[in-house]
Amino acid sequence: MDAFLQLLTEWGYIGMFISAFLAGTVLPFSSEAVLLACVGLGLDPVWSTVSTTAGNALGGITCYWIGHLGKTEWIEKYLKVDKKQMDRAERFIRGRGSWMALFSFLPVIGDAILIVLGWMRANVWIVALSMTLGKLARYAILVAAALGIIESI
Image 1 (tube, rainbow, N blue to C red):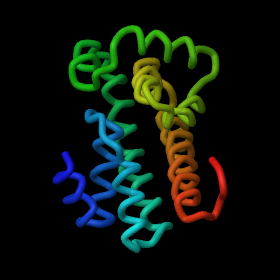
Image 2: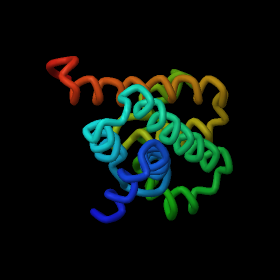
Image 3: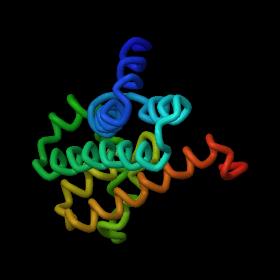
């Protein structure tokens, strides 16, 4: 895994995009580690944040579309989201709407939120916008903290 992380770091913005996409879909992967490594190596923090956000948002939309397909066995097999996580996410979302995708950056339940939104046929445009804003905020705060722009998270 260390060699893969190093390879993605060497690829710069493309590596950040790929790592964030994978982290947003099927792999338990730390896109944050690649992002911080690349920023630490001197890549532009703004473009690094944009690249990582774009990859993670595309990965999130992939989760949404898998949920939209409604194939529970695929969700459990490929995304490793079990029925218990889906039920928790559905209770969290019920009655709140597409804007709940803003919280898709949360560990453990974030992918389940997007899958459930797809399963519930939530408005894809609102889901994409709110999800992207949430992920952008997370990465921007992380980079700002790493650069010392903000003192605590």
